[in-house]
Image (cartoon, rainbow, N blue to C red):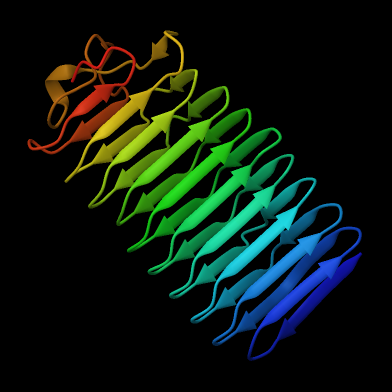
Length: 238
């Protein structure tokens, strides 16, 4: 195991044949932070921060960013990749770079927040994406799942200046969840003609709503500006 608590200037590269556990601060002012593990990566109560560099975490097994941990890059991109499960209960944020979270083998669970102020955000899972927290971006947001996307009752997905794309065989959006693109488009694409479960009220939404989705007050919001649209990628109906 590698247990690291350090603060340095320059590039940081961590490699381990087994698991990597980060419990403290890993910081560089101008370089990249690259961490690879032969087993799993756990960031628990720690922080990975870089000023002008990129952050790259990859493991063949689970990756966990928990315990209020932060992964932050001021101007670089952030990529966190697990070949199994990826769990984020902390915060992942970049001021101007793209943020990509990937769980190729199984499930991506987001309870914390993922933010890119000026870049794009991508959440990719081989099986299921579960969002209980928030995803915010100045650019496009893409959620792409090999099976199902589940949006919890307090979840928020907001593309401030771009589009929001949700790609899955099934979409389950709990009442109170929000997907919004004030200046763009919300688009839902399904490889097969399966049900989209989205309770919503047309009378209270901004812009166009997904055709045929109805429910009770306080339900899911899918919204765009008057210039944008909400589309079901299966039917092609705005």
